[in-house]
Image 1 (cartoon, rainbow, N blue to C red):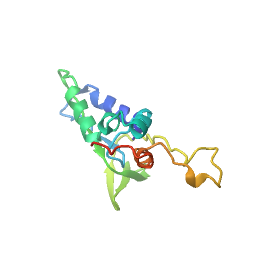
Image 2: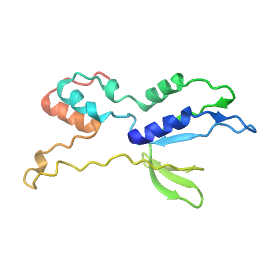
Image 3: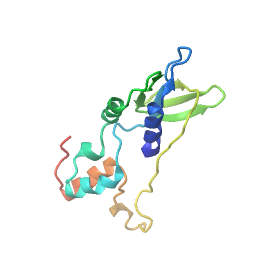
Image 4: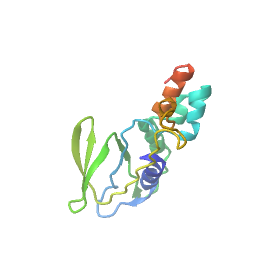
Length: 162
């Protein structure tokens, strides 16, 4: 997930995979437990001013990947790959068997792989570094769509339109 994982998946999908010996294009699976890609620099505009609509800075992966698929150019003699977004987390990797166990909504599944790229994104601390124990309950984290929604609620900002 994250911007690195999304960009890598899209670049891999755009590569001209040669049609040799009937081999299909690779299967590209991107794991992210969220259904939206959040462009975090616009979180504050969404949360505070309401000048940015939800789909402008946090499009659903299905919409984003569908748009990317339509924009891909055709290359004669090559096939392009599709990116599949799977709302799940990798919970175990068996390198010898080349298999990852993924979990979502209390269920687990196995995904076999030839090549695995791990792009975990960023983990933000809960609250700023200067928050003291006495004031920690008054600090709102601010790095996810849920955090922005909580701030909008606290400020009485208008509800999202999407």
